[in-house]
Image 1 (tube, rainbow, N blue to C red):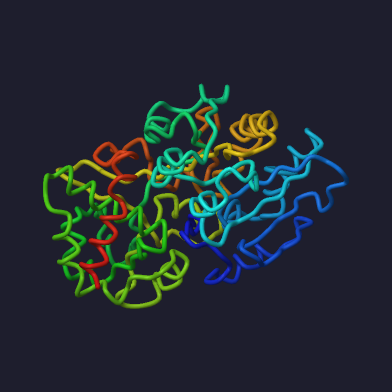
Image 2: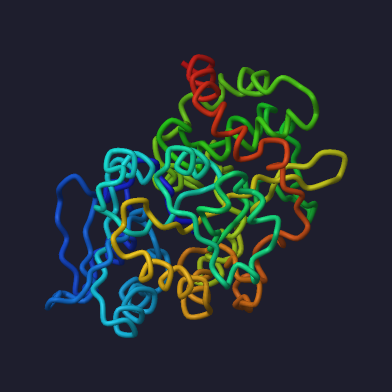
Length: 380
């Protein structure tokens, strides 16, 4: 299942198996302070140079073994460059943490800024410009999705949001479930739809942008859809993806979930069966979806720029990129990576038209706060 990209990440709300994954050794020290968690990968510094990395709490946490994934992603670099890496997950979220520490050198690298918040980080002078050699292996569309932030942030993974559905309810008789947003506002669908609050959760924020872009494409007022579904979904809007997922499929009225198109691949890998499908939204027979792009960048104020650049280069190479599909359940940005068999069960993203061109990164940075306030007023 796609990592819970909560805007205010932490341990609360994780499912039992996630807590076990998060608790395993990694030779880690966990410190509760102004950060959700702190991982010292090597366990001891011994006078070595130290790199401080900010990321989200669920980074590499959804595979079979988070310990092994962390060792491959961070431990391998530590050994190769004789450094110590400290991974911190700011409780207030990545963008807020970088703003509060602007230029102080408390972080060297950030993993997880997106096409929703990356432009703001670049505009605020929080990042250092860098184009890695492996940039040649990343599609122009992914890089272009970052807009004016593209010189500062390099994509390392991406995926489309999706609406997960219970096949026994929404795919009867072998008919493919290919809804328009209008279909999702019908009482039968809307009464089953579990959503995340865009004010607190990044999946919910992405879903809001997906809906706005869809109606922007149709030259229609995006607020009308929320007005139509409000009577049905008001009690089914949750503050985190993890909480919403916990209710999915638990009974009547819980058979649709705003999530990610790779969820069926996750279910196949962990043996959870084939009863859940995932879909984007359609218009005139064409599949339209919202693409979320996650990036790595160098933090302004870092005292280790050459080492930071080496880590970005390494992060985009096969050693790390091969870990992304079955630990992050996203597509690696490096186009040379061969996908595992489990991804045969995911919706092919090449068949989806990204709606991001109707709401580019710069437009989002300018308007997102106003849109979220408007949503809050609509649903309040």
